[in-house]
Image (cartoon, rainbow, N blue to C red):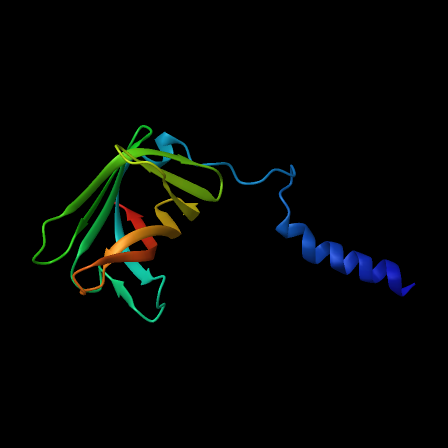
Amino acid sequence: MRFPIATLVAAAILAPACDKDGSSPSAPTAQTLEGTWRATKAEFVSIASSSRRIDVVAQGGTVTLAFSGNNYTFTLAQPGQAPVVQTGAWSASSDVMTLTRTGSSGNQQFDMTFSGNNLTLNGANALFDFNTGNYEEAKLYLTLVRQ
């Protein structure tokens, strides 16, 4: 008699975690992402030394990601430096966003979480100067809110 009760308890615990129709979340569309998103966190973490990290927003910089159709504009502005602007095309699945820069081979792939006015993009490869005068390989982590 214990087995059926244990099975019912397990089913009751697991059922809310499953979609009713068995499908996974859908990818965001151009219409759902349309507009400008501002970073509340934009952290670059050195691949060579993970203890070397800089949150550009915490240091007074701004980062925006604007979507228009299937195109994007990424702008990074740090105090005392000229803004860095990157444009290109984007695509997404339910949990991965890919940014393909115009005029460049390769792309940046982020693990993505999207919900309403919040967008989190984590772990894409990037280049960043950690105040050494040289750009080095890093990972980029963004937390963004819709403007």
